[in-house]
Image (tube, rainbow, N blue to C red):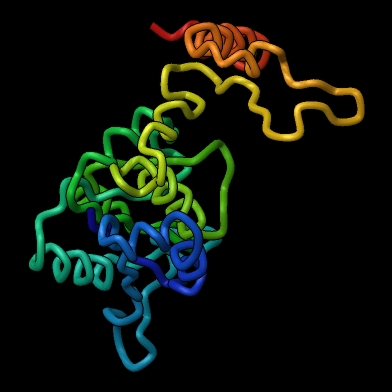
Length: 226
């Protein structure tokens, strides 16, 4: 998979993609993330990418010309399965969305900044809009990093244990069960006996029961989904 990201702050994204799971995914050739500085397509000697909004109001808007030029340049090189704009008014990111996007070959992510991007970019080029929650960030870069991480770990071969991602929270609209590791007893707190039994069938049944109980307590809304 290849993910291209358009941004005016590429330095905000460099670190997340150079460590841990995403770094290993890149080294294995399973996920390539390429950052594109929008100012390379900016106007004039100052590489302008933003301007005051029509109608007045506080906050600058990312201009249509640099963004359109950057998108066209990238689309001339490959076809994108989705052109994604990270925005607070997009669909809230879910495990279902991440699962779907992980099956694609090429994704293009647009990071907004300032007051947002010219609406005509959304109308003409964007195919999907995604939010990571009901709050506002200074730009779309951190949201893009969250999206890429949630997608990347689902690509076959990225995680050392291919089944690990399948047992994450939300995969079955359930929260993950509690987990434990050594030692089996610490400060009088013991690991549940069932996990030490070696009975795989009973362990899986226990984990499912725990997932149901935890979801009922912490996220009952997940159980109401049809």
